[in-house]
Amino acid sequence: MGSNFKGSKKEIEALNSYIKLIRSAESLSSKINLELSEYGLTESQFGVLDALLHLGPMKHKEIGKKILKSGGNITMVINNLERRELVQRKRGETDKRQFIIHLTSKGKNKILETLPHISKSIKKHFEILNKEEKKELQRLCKIVGLQIRN
Image (tube, rainbow, N blue to C red; front, side, top):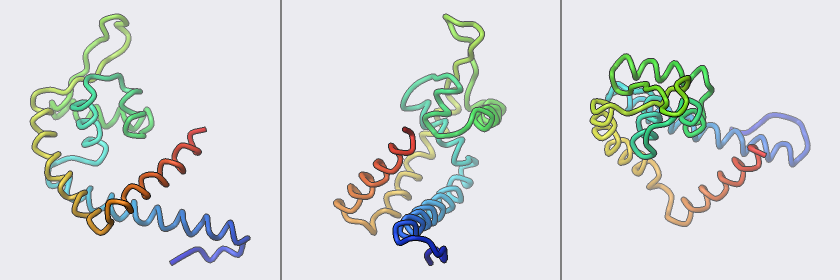
C-alpha cells in the first residue's frame, strides 16, 4: 500500500519509497528481534556486543554512533548489559572522567553464541534477492543515508 497523500508526483514517489523502505526494515527488524529474544538480547544489546567484539573497547558516544542510538538510550542499554555482566565500564587511562566499555568474557561468549545464528537468519531473509540486487539495495541505501547526514 502506498501513500494516499494528494501531492505532486515527486512527493508521492518519495513517500511511497519511504513507506516501502520503512515497512521492509520494520518487518525484518521485527523478525530479527524475535530471534534475538531467544538469546536474551535486544537488537540494541546485540549491536553493542557486536561492535565491541569487532571494534574493541569504546566510549559510550562511539558505540552510540556505531549502532545509531541516542546517548540516553545507549546508557540504558549498557547499564542492562553491565548488570548481566556482559560488558564492563573501565575508567579511561588518559582521562579518568571517561569510561570505556569493554566486553567481558561472558559477553564475548554470548555474542559468539548468538552471531552465527543471527547472521544465518539475515542471510536467509536476503536470499530472495540476487547478488546484483543486494549490491543495488546497498548502494541506494547508502546514497539516501549519506545525504541525510549532511
